[in-house]
Image 1 (spheres, one colour):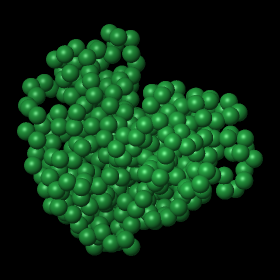
Image 2: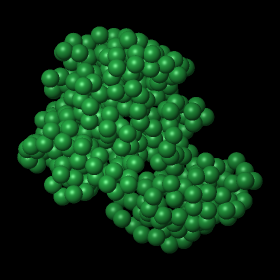
Image 3: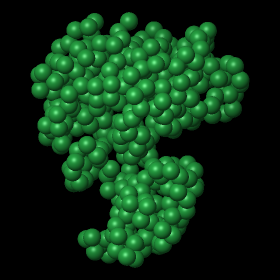
Length: 403
């Protein structure tokens, strides 16, 4: 049964002055709130290794933010902002980034109503010769509600990944209320970012330094990666009063067979870095259920976890998923998920969560509330009272799942 939840019950007073507009000088200098057994304590993020259980399995999201925001102009001089969301043609991230002449993306377009059928030219404010040689153009293929399919063409034969590096801007969150600056090129990216595709950073990972990672490894904690490309939907507020009316966006993810095998051993706790890692890991159970019941996994729908009771153990589900992949000669599971985690969700894999402090009335607050069995206000009241910094560049928390 789909939970009936009023989003206004997940509001809290967040003054603009509490939002961290810039990162601290050192990634791991942020505060760390530790929640365990309905109690809250304050630490530095550098203390994180000492708070984690030895021998645990820790999962990071190694997605990499792409500079997906570009500025074009019409022949009339009107400016049009284009924000690439997801590949259309070619349909896979790795192939579209390798394209050398032409590609199509689903995009958010500023001033879309003002864009007719004319071809746009990239704005080259610095009069950069290399950018000028690209001769990057944008054509409107199709409008799709608030988004559009845009075709990009360019010269010189360089791959589109290089085109974005040259012509694009890092799409920092709109609530920072500022333009992208040089510091964002480094700091709005995790230390371990590897696979291009996100238009927003998995911000829980922004605090990690090599010093912290070495401390985690010294406790015998097994460090692993998944990849979920974060979509622009992460910025979207829940506009409907009833959460049941809020549509979740699809995000693609990749998980290796090797990690699935480790997860099927339920004798050690699982630590997820970020809500994106949680959504990926918790989606795996339902992918395995599909393997058991219909022979193959499919994208995970938004309300699948709530539609009925599932009789299978996590071990049975993961084993079915592993068997499917191995029998088809696959080393990785590649799927999409629209899963929404709200109070009433049954966590099957994740025991610890490292995460930042999220916007009021957001799906991420709902996830935190589900993880701590409704005790989210205790956490946020403490953070507000004791000067924690909020949102993407803000401070961090380590939450232990409430039983």
